[in-house]
Image 1: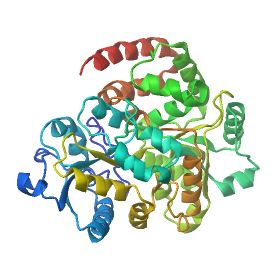
Image 2 (image 1 turned 30 degrees about the vertical axis):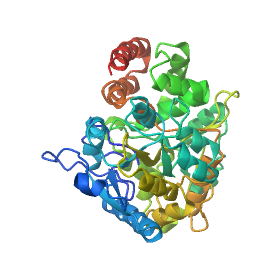
Image 3 (image 1 turned 60 degrees about the vertical axis):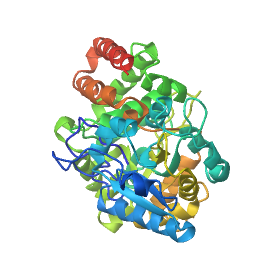
Length: 434
């Protein structure tokens, strides 16, 4: 799900997610990415080559079942070239500039647009003429390059939200907050009641990025989030300072000792009812291994801060497929992508992995758990979808600048002005490079 930044040797949140393609690092000595099958097989009209980052067992099996169903329908074999998830990310640039496979797994939003703008991917508007009716407008927006053309076919997604135990809210008479003031007031009540208001662990440095995203787009809107992540807006802008000021107001209610705590450990305090809330992706449900506990888990959208934007943006990292710059079997590629954009293909995947939801608005949701149904409704009803900071921006910027900077803020919220100046200086240098 979340791509593993090359700076993160420790397991990421998706790195431990079954069925999401975030495999743990396999270590050194992994061969360089290259196309599979050799030039002979890759130009075979009955074969499409596909570069995959789904090295974890569950997604690997789920994708294999999709490709088997496609072969049965079309007679075309998908020759899969699977590489370790992290290695795939690290080498993607050189891979796409060399002799890549026809199709490759990748991520929606900025990460997709980056390679489209470099002419390392093929536009697929012809595919979207066939599959467009299967997707909501927010998904269509996520699949377009900066030039307005389509470059991506989404398969699955999942939301970030605030998770809580229904029984804890019922016991204390808490109500779901819909505004910032209500959220702060609820945190105060929880603290008074002896609960940790907000479970939090930032040992792996990525969870804090999710908190910043929520506050920023609730306060400043989706468009500003996109501009900031793309390096177009300044981190010294008063809007950014206002987002950090809001976060500072919430910090006293975050769990102490977060620098030494993983997201899994933080989740356990929600499981044990020691914490009242937890802002995270829906993969938090993994930690609820007892069915009664899982049935007690619920979530709500991050509350409104600025009425101009309400709760119309949802952070929903989305994974899918792109086409390389010069696929050898263009006709086969088109057929494959048209199939991958169908509810049928999504059903096959979701049968093997219940930790995500379909990107298509036409997928059958009858087998969804209550949490999946709610996640699906939240995503499909969103006006805009974001992809998480490290997908909406350059990976070198988020890993080398934003992760350590956010941790500095968390430990010293009063030093935010100089911190933002430092971020802006580093941003200009990184975004100026190719």
